Length: 267
Length: 335
Image (cartoon, rainbow over all chains, first blue to last red):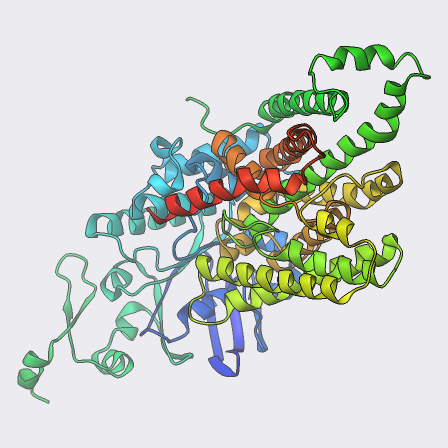
């Protein structure tokens, strides 16, 4: 059984086709990362997989069952989405925000039981947000807020976690903390991870497999070494790149080259 | 470990009890005082007279004051709750039925039907509902399209629809030969004096609306953190938004038919409550209901007793309190 399998899916917004006949499979407990240039359709793909957007054709299955067979609530107990940023116009407290993750598990009137509080507390401990519990969302830094959104997603107790650029706009230490957190979640809680990243080097170090997208199509799909090839990446991103090996992790390392150096590149 | 979560149960009981007492006090004062008795101590006389069915006070209480106070309570609760719902749906703490022009649209519908001589129920109410839904559609279209799309464009669209509705109302009134002109003008400014027992059955239309909103309080919390996030938390965003929108517009339209244009209740009450009890709608919904009811009963009491030559439209009182607060909130949001 696969965690996700998408078969020839297409999707268009207002006449413009964003996903073209795209297929992919994500295995159970895999760390799966989607990369690609801006406008490649990465976020749209994530919305399609989480049923936030309806696909025009093709089919999507989650854990061996067609996506359309699930109700919204069933889906929410299985798959959690960490979107880019959270609206903070209304100052909810961190603890209450995390507790919202219990929504798909509660009855009609939404009264939490002891068990729900326990799960929320655990989710905060796992994400190191317990000390922020009494603060409100508008008092947090970018990295703290990102961890709170992830805590809420964990509180949903999903089998798969979808994340849209969780490390964007974070400094180096916070980027690594978030990625290590996801790696831990996968190892300890057996949660499948599917995320979008703009940082190819982070992706290379953490991903089991990468999906490289451009213009709504799959360019390459496989282990990081198979995807992170100079020609493929240069064509997809439209710039010259330096690719070598990271001496510590042994994974590929990708650097964009400014125009003033590319004359010497010998091509 | 210290308990960091907002526990609903106890706080809900405490808040309901407190605001319930406030409402009871407001209603008692509201029924005891009026143009014939301006002394708060008349409450004692009133309570004494309730045992004596033949007195004038007894008749005034049952036939005049009680229906009026009940109407004020219902109108206040509805407008306050309506404001709260629009604030969630439009994710703007300044949204309110009156400011968005929704009340104005309902008034155009109601006046058209009144001038045509259509019976009050269901004619005038249906027409008011149609008017407010149409205004809402235009406001949302204006605010979502265009590059200006943001909080201010929503408020601007509302202001313009309000001005337009005002012009249409004046046009209709000027063109008509109706003998009810004075009455309609008074009603426009927000007036509870047409309250009588015959209008109370409209409660039956509004009470289910309260229930729907109460049940949806939790999804309202989730909605506030973003549509996509809400959807992935199992909330059917489109369906719930539509239910809330229609419910809120319906109940506000009915109240406009009964009491005219009473503004700013839906801004003042939810705002004060959010500051004191936080943003959780499982508490805010019942609190806005009770708080809005108490507030309008109190404002109506002022409207009846402030002036010695006749009463004021209650809309004047609520606007005098609400408009400055709105300006203050707008100013603070810009800081």
